Image (cartoon, rainbow, N blue to C red; front, side, top):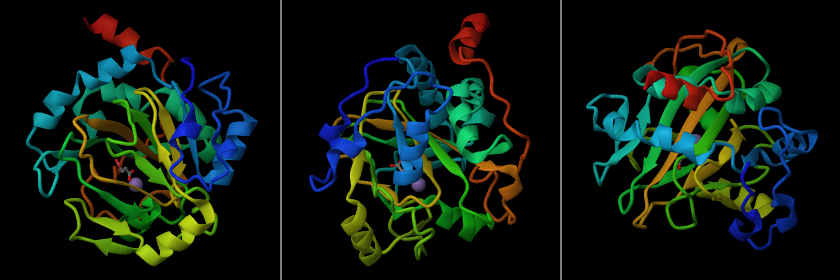
Length: 292
Ligand code: SIN
Ligand code: MN
């Protein structure tokens, strides 16, 4: 594991107790420590520095140009710039991403939090393109999962891997720590603001939550991992920098909590409820070597 970055430098709100967001020493990347689990439960998210190595990130990034070039409804484009905003269903479209969704460094921690019987709900890379990546409004994922797909409870997890270095400049995710604690807040479907329909949280609610929890921007080098829960309020600003910001996102959900409505296409919420079985830790690179 590489040395973790100094997360204190990235807290967007000086009123936060910065010490709370110090990195935690990681001993086994496939198992969260009790301290990490406590942090996740308390804050609603967990940052995992150095989760994937540069060679693994490079193997994933090598697949992206061809996937982004495909004309498919699973590639959503930005409303204004026309650049790819999010490319979905990637494990169905690409072998390397098919392995990543079964990676033990993602699925091990997810099973500790959400149980052993998980299915792949959504798989994507959110591309916030240099100069053109647009806003993701304030929202929490369960509002969409419940409102669109009839998911009963906010038990899904969003697992991220940074594929580029993410800084304050290129559109990092903003989290409102502890915003998950009282469960789902009011949300409504926004079909106007961006190219992607999203159930969003209004400004008054965001202001009240931020008054309690502040804002943290999730920044770090490529290879950083994030885990956050279904009720955590988050968003991200536009990318006006010359640097792309690509983040892999895997949403997993307990099978017992599966979708009850099928109104969205499969790439937005997969219907295959087969339990995820983790592969070996070296699955990304070993299999690549065998294939070449
Ligand atoms: C983003 O990619 O900036 C937003 C991702 C999310 O809402 O999960
Ligand atoms: Mn989200």
